[in-house]
Amino acid sequence: MKKTFLSTVGLLLVGTLFSQTLEKRYNNLSVTYYKYSQTEDGFAFFDKNTNSVLVLNANSQLIKTFVCPFTDANASLIYTSKVILNSNGKFKFVITHNKSITIYDEDQKVLFNRDSSTIAKFINTLSGPKMVLLSTYGWQEVFSITGEILKIKEISGDKSDITAYPNPTNQNLTVKIDKEGTIDNLMLTILDINGKEIDNYILDPNLKEAIINVERLNKGLYFYQLKGKDLDAKPEKFIVQ
Image 1 (cartoon, rainbow, N blue to C red):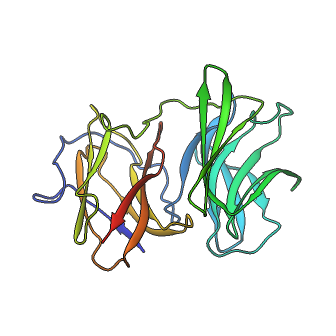
Image 2 (cartoon, rainbow, N blue to C red; image 1 turned 30 degrees about the vertical axis):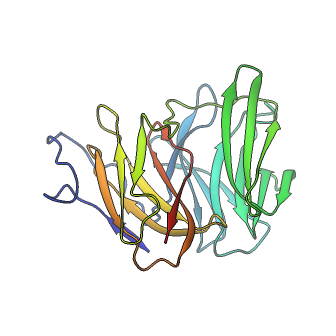
């Protein structure tokens, strides 16, 4: 289910008006900004209708189509880059599908696969780049990887940046963003324990707080994740009682 949040009194913090020019309207709400290499960036998303990943440049022009060698209506694109694992100039796609995490290159070659994993996070550390996987069994696995992880800006999800309360909850979940300035293409995604997207909310770029009603969700563990241009927050847990 996909929803749009506007800056309305009582729901979201109202921000100041700003000048803008619409460049592109996507029907797919999972469009995410990526930095493909040191000199290339753009937008990419998983198209469920064609079972493909569509890669666009920063001007929203299609530059690559990757037809996935699997069928899964719940598949989603986690990360796209030319410089993770190796620097051969080919796109790599990190995709969650069929309760697995797989990294493909643009020629459909499998570079990495891990069953029973649904959420992946890429981070830079003092000892080199790492890939963190969340298992469907509840544990996390950390892998050292080669190549580079390129991000313009990352919100880590620490309490100083993003908080959600009350947690646990049985009615409303309030997600608060303690960041200055605007965040373009801001989106809040709700995922289940298997990494399946349940809801996507398009948020106002000036948003500081959003209230999500979770009464219709079954009791259990869920995740919320914030993404936007120059923003990639890690999935954070919340519990529905």
